[in-house]
Image (cartoon, rainbow, N blue to C red; front, side, top):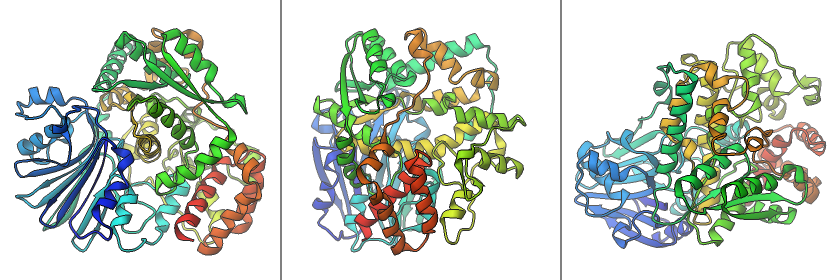
Length: 594
């Protein structure tokens, strides 16, 4: 896992300074390669092929590559594609595949990746990002100037001045907790979307999408429950084995929930050794803490278990660090626990850990999924009267029912926060934006849509940004077996009666009973939650409101009266995510622009 950066013009800051901003992503080696007016930089976290021959930027023949990620099936690809490689690294495999297929090989790669390959003969950049956005890729393009990097802090150092705030990204962030598609908070800086690649040469910049999940799940599977369970377990085992490819030790995050518990138990069984597991919890507001459940699983599998205790002061101290690490606002409050947990793993000298992200989206793990399916089945779901402000029902259910009446996609991802009714009250002038019409809502079953849109928005834009930045700031690579694309495609092609059943994660729970105690498999779901809003109000109280209003004076976008109402509701534990989302943006904006 690594940091990459490059450009085809003269950097505003010395390039060595630019590369240093990515040192945390790769403390094991740092190098720069220049070719004519092109400069390429790489910082390396050595995990596969620890030898110096695998350092980057890597040059073979007329190809220069900077690569961030892991290709889990690189050894198989060498055999299957008859590749001649001089190193033992997965990086060289990408070069050899390009030489064989040009840009048409990304579908062969199993793994997480973001890379830039420069062909000196064709004078062409070829940049790609993995299917679900596990690894980040940002770029700048303006009048033949092209630059790319793993994190925006590197791109910003390349430029002579701070770009303006992108108001489209702000609106998108308020809606989904992060900017979606190719948006960033800085005008002129873009994300390469997950499952996409770009080429840049004398003819200009071209985007292409190489992975379409909707096409992969279009053909349904016809399986009995027994067959489905057998194949699901096989897919899980394969996904896990792929993510154990490493020349350094691998640990496991263990929250005590079903997903991380199953991954840890399967890993423990596969390894035949005592694995290291890590959990974070709380001594205050203990109803949020899962430490006892994690300890129960750790005892069951016989792991070397490590507990991290977060207190209010830890949370507050890490809030500023989270904002600085992210470069732009991200409103997932679980970022701070993830940051602390990653630090603990790093302090034990471990570079790689497994994580449970992607399971809930794959196996319908949350109650809102079932509420949505009830609407599709022509039922109604109860709205929540305590989410009424100014006589307007602002509950998610009310929005869902309204969308259903207008034959619009009902569900816009688990992270959806400020919906249309909220934004009409928040903004002084707001024209409703349909973010979902770019996605093929009518081509799939309702249960498939729920997973599909969460992979496109919640997973790719929020969860993956969170776990990459929060782990890599501590030089830790997180791997998520549930985000194996073959496992996801298999699950989404199952018939709806097997996917939905009579409980969340029905099939996964049956597989898990082979590895875990019944009380862990069937306990009530908690999610990776924390007392974030309680601590926020205890620490800042009216400073929360003052910070948001100060920023609004500068931007003049929002109705102060609605912000004040949300703040008062937040005291009662309502609209928690809305207040957090506004506050995180305001803290960031003051730091960057005021």
